[in-house]
Each structure stands twice: as structure tokens, then as C-alpha cells.
Length: 223
Image (cartoon, rainbow, N blue to C red; front, side, top):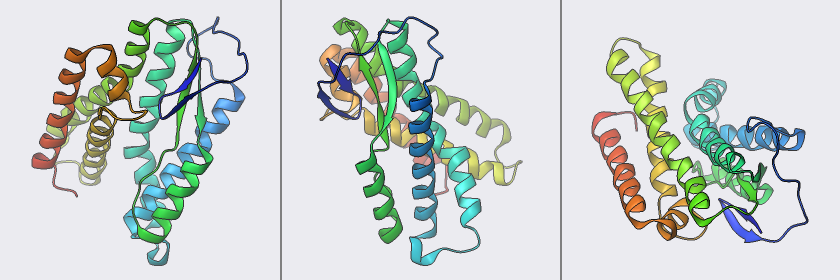
């Protein structure tokens, strides 16, 4: 079996099961991560500018802001899936989605809107239903942890750190929205896998995700 956390299940050729460190990244995986992160960052910067026809001298700043405050929500979410899967002895590597990246960049360039499927962690192995459920929930939980980290920083530094407030604000929004979106129980999203595995855990995580969006919306005035 070969499944993607942002794509449909599919069949592939045989792969070697994980036997080494869970922190190992292949050259192919690193290349795919770099491509997806770069495209995602560029799309976000284009969104901030309102599209390719409105680019200003602030574009490099928006690229940096996107890379620092928003890209980690996506990257670390995928890393969580990967590390938990490898912990259970599965083969797990990130693969970029070329079609999703192209569509997302075109949409951001012409409409100033970001809706992108950068890619997913592909998992292969004989994990149990319980283990696959834990692999799925690892992503949203990581976004929750990152949000708590950012909110703590906002409470400590808010109002005193100037531009850091903006970075923290987008950090909170990025993790809250990504967490809530992935908890939707539809299609290939994490929420469907988690709900199939454990409804109590699904509804708990969904409630937390909605709460994060609500708190961010009422407390952080940047969007």
C-alpha cells in the first residue's frame, strides 16, 4: 500500500522499509521539500502583493516574512507525519505535487489568492490502524504545539517588539488555519483518517482547531 496524506491512496513499486534514523532525509526528498517550500513561499508573497501585476519593492520582504512565519506551519506539519511513520518502521518521504504547485502559483500570480497543495508525506508499510491514526494526527497536533509556542511569545513580546509582532501574528494564523483545514473530515485530509481511527480524538482535535482560529481572530488583528 502506498498512501499520501494530501493525495489519494495509490499503488507503487516496492520500497525499502525504514531501518535507520527517523531523522534521515534522502536527496530526492530534500529536493522536493526545497521546491515545495520555495513555491509555497513565493505564492504567499504574491498574495501579500495582490498578484504579479502589483509587485512592489516590498516583495523580497514579503518573501522573507512568508518563509519565516508561514512556511514552518506546512513544513513541520509534514515532518511530524514523516517522523511518526518512520518511528513505526514505515518508509516515509515527502513528495512535492507539481500540478498543485503550478496551480497554486498561477492562482496567486493572477488573483492574489493562495490555495495550494504543495505535496505530502508518502507512507508505505504494514502499520496497524492505530499506528496510521497516530501518523495522521501528528500533523495537526504539531500545528497546535506551534500555535501555543507562538501565542506564548505574543503574550511575552506583544506590543514591545515591533515587526516581531507581525511575524508572530502570521505564525499564529498560519498554524491555526492549517490545523483547522486539515481537521476537516473529507477526502484525503487528516481529519477523515483521524475520524475513521477514533471519533473522540477527532472531535477533540477539531474543537481545539476551531478554538485556535477563534482566539487568533479575536486577539490578533493583522488580517
